[in-house]
Length: 105
Image: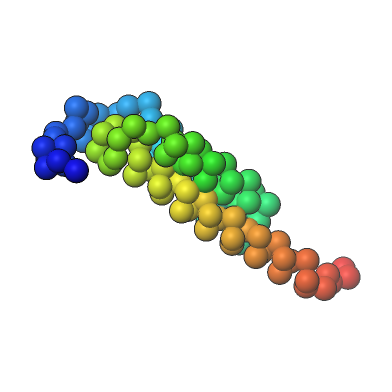
């Protein structure tokens, strides 16, 4: 790999809000909401986690550059990681809830 490629400046500023960055941020926020909801609403956590992870994977698959290029790569990675965490926590909460005996009230 050429050094000039590694040292090339991004054509998009660090604070410029692109469409990919908005979608990646929303994917990460949806996945984060799934992580937060995993204790009380495990089914919501599963859905939010899957949505965040899938959106992140789609963004990563279509990105034509790395971090700092305006493609939302960092937010997409966050969406994938948080989405997977939400799915695991939500699934664990669902399994635990089904194993507990229900109280008769």
